[in-house]
Image (cartoon, rainbow over all chains, first blue to last red; front, side, top):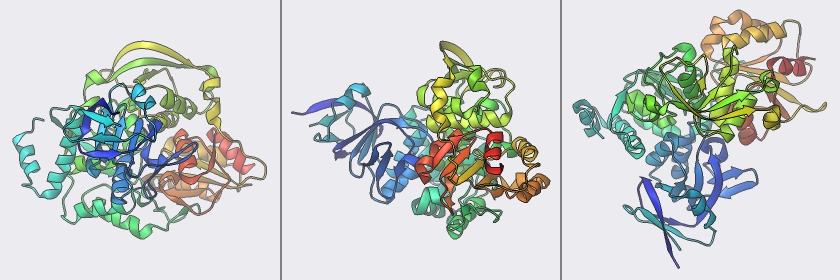
Length: 132
Length: 388
C-alpha cells in the first residue's frame, strides 16, 4: 500500500530511496563525514549514501554547505533530504550539490511512520512524496 | 525574483561565467526562501577556507572560480585556514600547508583581505543596520547581536558568491520584521559567575526562537563565547542583548520567560582533568580578542612554565603583531601560539586526553572532530590547571 505525503519543494528534483531518520538538528560540519557518507550520532555512525535523509534541519557551522557539496563529489550523498525546517546553509549546499530538498508537512507525524523497509519516491514538480 | 537590469546582465553571463554562477546560487537560495529581490552588501566574510574542512571538492570549487581571474566586488575577509601562519605552534600540524596555500592564493587573488580569522569584526566593526553576507556562524551572530548589523547565516559558498557579486538575497535578518525577540532568558547568579559558554550551549540546544538575554557588564570575550556556543549547538543568528544590541535594529514581542538555573547547564561543564591525564588548555575559539590577551598576561606573569600539558592560544596574525609584547610574554611562559588557525579547522600533531577550554563552540566540535574529551572552565581555571 502506498501513501502520498505533502511536502514543500525547496530544491526540486527526482529521487527514490530508503529513508534514514536522524531525529535531531545536524551540523554537517562535525556530524557528517563527507568521505564515508555517514552521520556520526551519539550512538554510532549511520550510513546516508543513496538514502532519503530525514532530519529536523541544519545547525552549527556555515562550512556545512561545503560538506554537502563534498558528499556529492565523493558520490556518497543522500538521494534527497526531507526536513522540518530549512536555513540558508542547508539550501546553499543542496543547490550547489544538486540534491533535492523538501520540507515535510507535519514532520513529527511523518517521522513516526518511517521505517527502513519503506521506499520514498519524489518526481520533480510534485507537491508530495510517495511512501510505499 | 525581481532583478535590476545590471543583475540580469550579470546572470546572463555578460561579465563571465563565474559572476553568472555566483549570482545563480544567490538567486536560487533566495527564491527557495521566498525572497523577491536582492540587496547590496558592503562586507562579505567567507567561511570554508580551511583545507582540512572543505577538502579536495572545496579546493577544486575555489580554484575553478579563481582560474577565470574574477575580483571580489566588495570588501571581503576570510576565515582561518588549517595551518599556523606564525609557524611556531607545536600543537597544530601544518601537514596541509601546500593545499592550504592553493586555497589562500585563490581567495587573496580574488581580492580577499588575508585576515584568516573568525572575528572579522576586529578588523572592520560593522555599522548598525548595515547589510552583510557573512559566513562563520559565530561571526554572524556577533554581527547581528552586538553591532546590530544585518546578515543571515550564509553558507561558505554563498558568502563567496556575495563577495563576487556584491549582493545577497533580501530575506530573513535583512528585514527588521524578522528580528523580533520572543523568548526572554534570565540567567541565574549561579551561572553568571561561570563561563557564559555554558548558557550558550543550553540555549542553542533548547530554544528555537530569537532570544533576548539579560546580561549586563559582561566583557566582550564572554559575549563572544556565549553567542558562538549558541550558534554551534543550535542555529541562532541573532540574540537581542539587553542594553547592548543597538536600538532600532530589533523588536521585542516576548511570549515566554525562561530562567536558566545552574542545574540546566551543569552537564556542559564536561570532564575535569584526572591527575594522570595529558591536558591541552585552549583559549581562542572564537579567536582571542586583545581583551583576553591582557587577562592571559596577568594570569601568566607569575608562572615560568607549564607543569602539565600545554596551553594553546589562537588569534588573528594581525593581533599577534599589534600586541607583540604580550605575545612575547606568553611565549616566554611556553604558551603554544597559533596564528590564523584553530583546532576546529586544523589537524593536531599530538593526541591529548582532555581539552580544557572556555569555549562552548570548541566543546561542541572538538569531541565530534578530534574525539577529545572536553571540559569548560574559566580563563583562570585553565591557566591554573596547566601551570600549577
